[in-house]
Image (cartoon, rainbow, N blue to C red; front, side):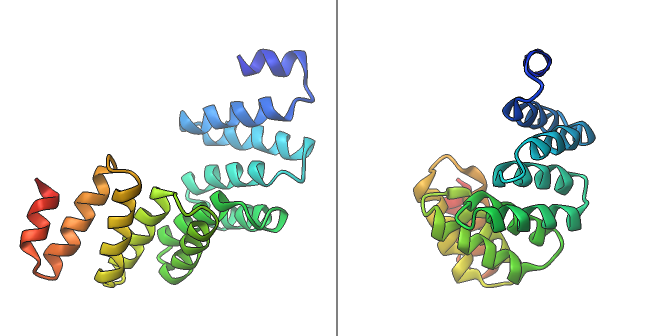
Length: 173
């Protein structure tokens, strides 16, 4: 119980962060943000806490606040792949696909075995009608995580869009 941990040790930044993650998962974004704020107050040099707060802001569609938090996380830790990945997701939601692609590519550079980064970069390429690049990323995502069903689905759609129906059917089966 993170509430009990906080009661016993109100200076425990990890408990605020972890409770914030629980609130975020329960879609209680304002409560999550309050806990991330406290974690940041206790440890203003933690890239992870800014990244987590950015994710809560993103869920609230407060994209500028989310981007500011991801920027801060990256400034604190330029090798923190999750901050680039999350910032890429926010840019994608805003329709800024070139910025999203750059961030997904940086996340992949830092963490080359992250199937989700390839998957989401593939989605961004797909929106931009860069089908060959999308298919390559969906294929890499599947290679890294064969149970990532959405990668098969979107690769199948990409194949369909360019008339490769045989390949599409294989992904849809």
